Every structure is written in C-alpha cells, then in structure tokens.
Image 1: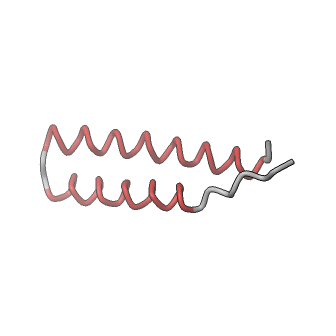
Image 2 (image 1 turned 120 degrees about the vertical axis):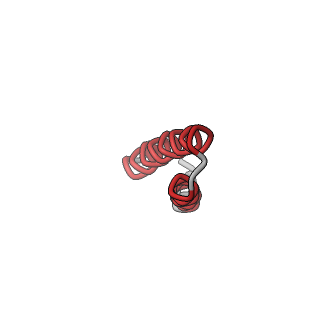
Length: 58
C-alpha cells in the first residue's frame, strides 16, 4: 500500500467527518451559513474522491 494512497484516504475520511458534522448543523439550525458550510464540505469531499490515485497492479 502506497503512502500517497493512505494519505489521500485519511484526508477523504476527515472530509467525510466534516460533511457529516455540517449536515447535522444544517438539520439543527437550517441557516444560510450552515447551508454554505454544507455545500463547501460536499465539494471538498467530492474533490478528495476525484484525487484518489488509481490502485496499482503489483
């Protein structure tokens, strides 16, 4: 397992945690600020998934 893949995987997990937290905040407060935060977290998470390296055949 490549250290780049592990680093990107941990980054993706972290962004998913932030997205989950932002979605809970959106349910609790439902404000424009929480909506912007949720959208930013979703964009960040999608970007992390798109930057994941392809698995290498060994």
